[in-house]
Amino acid sequence: MSPADRQDRSRWLVLALVVTAAALVFRIALLPVSLTFGLPGDHDDFVRWGIQAVDKGVLTLYEQPPPRHDWQLWYRGQWHVEQRTFDRVCNYPPLSAYLLYASGLVFKAVSSDRLINTITAHACFSSWSILCDFVVAAGCAALVGLFRPGWPARATYLVTLFFPPFWWDSVVWAQMDTVLLASVVWMVYAMLRGRWLWAGVLWGLAFGLKPHAVLFIPLWAYALLTVRARGRVLLAMLLAAGTLLLSVSPFILHSAWAWFRLSYMQNIGGQYADQITLNAFNIWYIDLLHTDSLDAFAHWGPFTKSLWGKIFLLVGLAAGFVLAVWRWRHDRRGLVLWSALSLLLFVMLPTEVHERYLLLVLPFLGVAAVLAPRFWAGFILLSVVAVAQVTWPSWKTIEPGTWPDIEYQAGHRWAVDRDTPRGRGRPPLQVWLHEARLDYLEQRALTSPYEWTFTVLALVGATATVAACITLRPRDAASATAPLRAPLPA
Figure 1 (tube, rainbow, N blue to C red):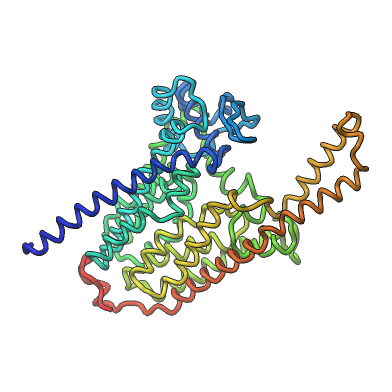
Figure 2: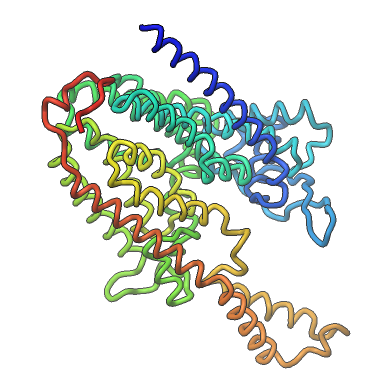
């Protein structure tokens, strides 16, 4: 290494340390924001599961809901301490259960009352996601470094650390999406390096952290058909299954397959199967804005919307898979491109998609944009949409499709108060419901233009990404077999 290279490396290390420290301080400073802009229900679930794991044993998490515990909420200008009147049995896989247990131990040590929705509570239970933000940034930089080492990879690390959808999701919303991404981004890196055993272990860890690891099955199918060492790929897939089974074996011995039913079966196809979208701006959000109905079992012709979504997804994945295998089988970038495209199809085409699913696409789409500029349009548009999706409680007044619930609540309130002094002055029920309906429509009119805008941006961004995948010229065989850390020719 020349003196100039050593000096450049030293400067980069200093810059990386400074920016890493700044990113950590930034996240710590954001913790108070989570008290009022976060998702208190999900936070309550996590903390109560952690308390249950500590007090009753981690193996009890899939047997019964946790005991209720005090939390604080800010409304009417002051803090109110109460208990949430809702109970949920743990629906995260066992490796996440272990993380909750560890957070619960720390929380018990630093908080005597273990009050939920405090800075201390958020710090304890968001620490894993905050840590994994840095692991994801390093993984994205490593992926770029395989093809464009030097400052493109370094800039990727710096930008990813301050990428708004990630820090909002990890700190303000206190979710665990980057915990999953930390394992799958490095999984793809290991696949590109030909380190299949490590890739299998990381995939198994991903399965143990969140059920969304199943979304990477198409990627492994692509690897199975395009990699010469198919035996090692198969062995890696078996190792992934073995890693998962090893991590869940205590739960299997204690409560059989309850962990699988609650964390996989219920999450993937059960709990919200009747809704066409869960605040995800995809093709079904157009239908939602048009019909103002969340009913996924309503019919479009011979099939329900839910079934149409599955058909769209299967057709899209099949077409994309053929395209990927045909065009990119000799191009090492294919693993990254197919990761981005297949995950995007899972977000845009089926029903029952959460707003946070888009976060799984962005690391791979961002890396693809650095490797091929034609992906920038889709990445930028979908990044804007991701910001809108993870901040929707802050700007939506009333969610579309919720009128049936509001109508029921208004009617129930009218009936309960009918014979009270407060209720005697109210109009007849039909007039009361009509006024509630007008108020609902007025509130919906405030944000529906923004929802249309973000939905259109999402569809345009997705279309631009698909077009880039179709038109991207694959590298030749010589480039495909070049040393991994050598930059590919332009």
